[in-house]
Length: 537
Image 1 (cartoon, helix red, strand yellow):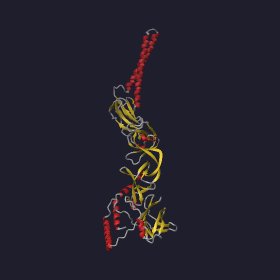
Image 2 (image 1 turned 135 degrees about the vertical axis):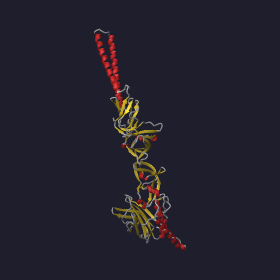
Image 3 (image 1 turned 90 degrees about the horizontal axis):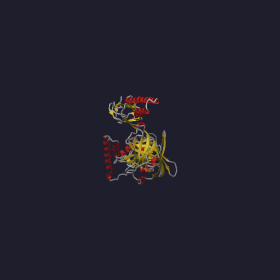
């Protein structure tokens, strides 16, 4: 590596790590650059043309065990060649730290291979294989590495060994140049930072309808406890909003206002008076009937006694019904009569959503005191466009995307129903799903995007969802095009299913995408303008 490249590489690495290189090191490198420049100018004092730089070739190959990135010059018979080898384990994307790789050049026409044996790594992941290529011709190039617990072979295709350097360099110059838009991210950076890639593969994914949705209480899962009669509310301890209550749990007491005539004692006294009056009327009727039999009174007296019994019995039935209705009203309305005070009880199990009661305050009949909502099971109401109404009735799975959460919440619908009518305001079909709500992760009134998974599946190229990034709302990935080169690819999403994202366009099966460390690659894309190629081996 030249002094200029050494300085450029130092500055590039420092900028990517967001810190300046040591000042003394920069000054020393600048001195070397100035001396090299002066010596170059002196050597060219006789108007000698500068020597052309030897082109550098590179190859990247993946097996199921390792990734190989190798740089080498064109192969010329009789001229020593250096292969700069970089090997990465694909199980954890760490550099290989042991072994002696070897290069095999096997004649395409048949024959024994020429083997060039490398050295132990000069630093983790970096190896040197040095030797003299065989006679001119076409060969199959391969790299083999064998260490404890790992044996791998990279078949790298055909390669030409040339008879002279001029022909070799001319052939190398015909190769297409690297993509100028590619992002350089060195092996040293990949090995140091969190990094991983994965191949694009064909995966069978569920298709989903994405529709707006909201969480609502179940039908019958919401209750208001109101004052059953005018009175004053009392409680030893006022229950708080958010508290969990069970069905029948006491929430407080309501003491009826004195003189209202609706308290238990007054109604019970009315019943007793009506019972006494009825018994007296019946006795008078019996007496009148006996006297009529003795012809001591006229028949009109018996008729009057009968009418009195009928009126007394009606008043008794009315008093008993009023007392029974009072107690039954309290039971069905969230309370039960207890002496001269009503105990207010929770009609359903759930959480207290609203508290309007204040101990010691007076309330009229029907005034709301508590609101209780069932939260262990809720209803998801999805607004399905009319065009997808038919498909929404054949749903195999359900999930809800909630703002602020990275992953959709998977849900299991127990009952699916709709009114069979398009809403006139939203022009959509409201479809309701009853779902369990373990841990209360779904909140009443919460909105999001429902994923209604159809039973139909499709096979598409897919990548892990960690590989997909967004830029101004457009999804894209980083494709690992070669050992230290990456390309940004915008993609069109076809389906989302769990940890996989199906891609309609932008990728093909076999491409390798960055699944860990994409942000570091993004930062590297901003550090252009200085050469980053070249390694010290």
